[in-house]
Length: 219
Image 1: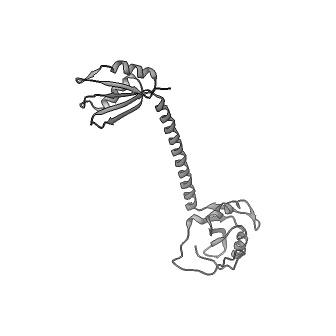
Image 2: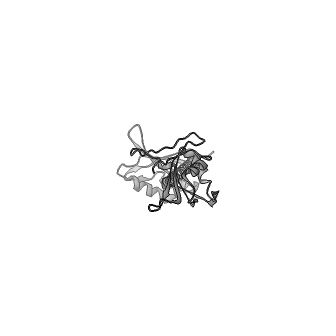
Image 3: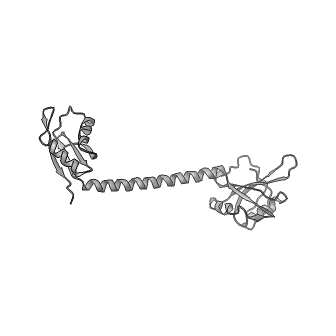
């Protein structure tokens, strides 16, 4: 985009020839307007649009042979917050034609990123709520503290073994201060808990008698 030769607008923004090679543009503030009246002068269009927003830069697309306007223009807005205002002009009759306004691809990508971030926030909020509900449910369950397990017994094998009595809500390995290992276990159903307690009580695995205790009884 190259600055066009425009005069001072009502916002006090002066546009002059500025062909600096190092000039940079913020693609997140660029919009594309098309279906414009091809007879409209750049200054007229600039002054009209400046009634609604502050324009940082403008480039009218022209035919390379005739130098006539193609009825299309790229606009860089001074403030990103003006983009919705510019988009709201879609369908408005300007200089006898219904104009159309589109966001640049960069702006679409930004909108997509915002929507993705919003989705992630909502997803994280939902996950957090689920964890809170699960944590609340776990606190109401009867927890079994299983200890004196032979160290040769694999943790995964023990978990599979305990699943025989029902679906586990909690299965956690604990390292005690005396360097012994114990397991915190809880089942979703009271029936499963009763089965496990009845079977595990006084059970010997690889020569060691399992010790079991309960806590967290539901009020």
